[in-house]
Image (cartoon, rainbow, N blue to C red; front, side, top):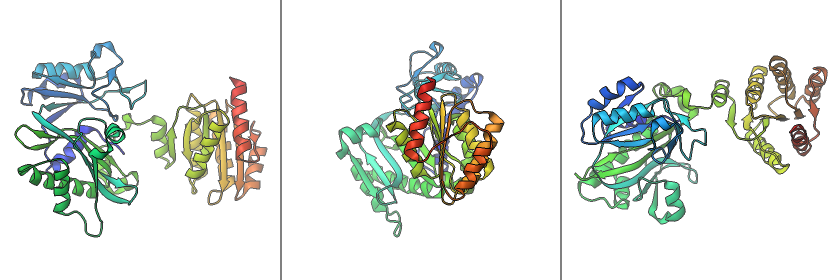
Length: 399
């Protein structure tokens, strides 16, 4: 689960990390009051959406002006005006796609006198399955570009869970950023704070970009991004309360409420599969036969008829879907349950696109019997290749 920058900064602040003062604005009429509560001489106005590249982004509406989603103002009234321009507008960045994302929240923050910019993140290292810190002297820019062009400028420090974090980790990170004097002590303290936040809130990723050094010689977390382990949210009610459902794809949100693993894609063939590996293989073979998957959907091994019904509804709700492929290899998941769910969903929402079903495994004969007796216009397939080939041909014949 992702949260907004201002929410992440509040968590940092609650744990004692250095952040600038700021105010969140949800209504245009509150912008002037919020800006007036902050000291100048510089105010920074930031659109709050779950996407990176806001500063380089562009608004679709001309009323928002030509500037991006991060703007500098030199007076409280100017900051309020910029916030009012952004609210309710649609911001497009390299991570949002061409449709962009609506800005429903704007964060007004005190400006900072920047001397240097760094990158600092805490995450789970996939290679070692341990918590690691990643640092770079190249802050304020996309870390992916740094990794591509100058990978030697990125340093990784892995934490042994048996011994935990020590002050020498903080010093090593400070030295990697070329910090000196009191800045080293501040870095050690910040690293300890980030590690504590990461553990106590079940973080997946905590990124500060940039971490700045002010002209007074102090460290400050100028921007922050946090993501949390969805599987741990049940024990993190305070974190779960920060969820902004308006930032999520409605179909993915509906799927999450039924514990379905669903990710919306840009293709035209909807997929319902059990098992993530089989789902990936199904998407690959759809591409092999010349089409594109509209989604990743793993119903899991313990799905009920109701879950399958909801999964089918989510797929058919996607206007881009021109055909559906159900590919089930029943081990834990029984084929008859899938069949009952598909039949129930089709009877409820109707079937306006071709449907190809491939069933194998536990209770496969019963599953096929349920579908055959349902009266539905379903195309049966013998294997995965046959199923993918048939659904692609059906979709292309309709175009």
